[in-house]
Length: 399
Ligand SMILES: NC(=O)c1ccc[n+]([C@@H]2O[C@H](COP(=O)([O-])OP(=O)(O)OC[C@H]3O[C@@H](n4cnc5c(N)ncnc54)[C@H](O)[C@@H]3O)[C@@H](O)[C@H]2O)c1
Ligand SMILES: [Zn+2]
Image (cartoon, rainbow, N blue to C red; front, side):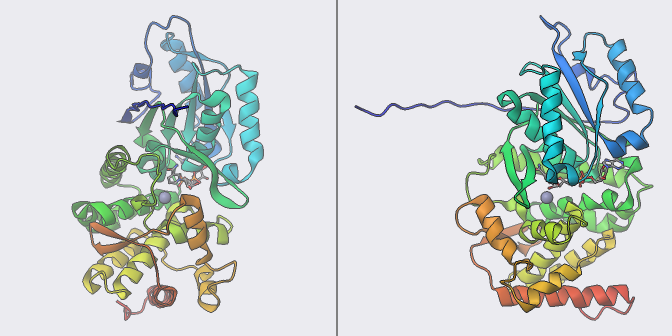
């Protein structure tokens, strides 16, 4: 018998809004997502990051009032559910189970909406729950950290950590809509304010020289959370670059081995785990970028001047570029606690040939399929020396 063939195309489309004061009475951004004349009233359930809940005490009342005022909105089935923010929700499967339990309890179906409001970790976990319960429930993401607004919330990935590995369980499911409300950012801790800048530096370095120039020029102002304007511009451009890549690269669900947006990430994911998630994702990515940029320079791909500019920009924004956990990789690269073990984990996660993004120029990445561990060790040593000089406030000899 002749084999049969199945073929179809699915088109995905979702809006990414930018606003301030999302649940203020006069703000129609959220309400406009929903049709006014549902034939039947769908259900809606909110999951909110505990830190956001704590620091925005007006939020629950505002949501309740908003749903009373715009009474054509879907039916709010419960008061918003508060869930701890941070990596713990991706590491401890009990939280995922509790979300499934609530979805079942409230009979949330494929015509219902799940709203998740919080940092990237909560978004990843709720996203995973939303796309697996009933094989997929519509998800609206309301990210509240810089990193979530400029990167994680606007993409198509959802995940939890499993077997002590980052994002081991996950899926590619585009959201129904994303709403970035800049007002939430005002309560971020300093480290979470800058952490997301790492993803902007990443995408600028591999795709957009002008954007890197902007970050370099505003590095000191970006560090200062009292001035939100450059941060808004950074979030917008970074989100735009990520969306363009996902939508136009021809590989939104990452079937190939090439993963340019993972520049700096092979070591970052390992460092997050080696530090028991004491490092934020963005902080680890900043170190990963510093490392891969230094390697690109030592390997003869990148000029000394551009290498210096990248390291200075990363440190001017306020990132550390060295943590003691990196040092373990110098003694024995095969040790379980060496970041070089992250290389095989990275390859295993993506499948296919090992593909690492390096830098050829600011604004231009280049992929390689092999790396030289000794040169990487030399890069780690350079970062350590540089970091010491910076901490001791000495004149910088290294660069
Ligand atoms: N899905 C993707 O494509 C993708 C991309 C990049 C990163 N990620 C994931 O995102 C996670 C990191 O996200 P993150 O950087 O947002 O960190 P996070 O979610 O861990 O949040 C950091 C801390 O900030 C708190 N917080 C959140 N919003 C706040 C606010 N407005 N004010 C005060 N505190 C607030 C959280 O409760 C948490 O304690 C990692 O798990 C990473 O793997 C996913
Ligand atoms: Zn990242």
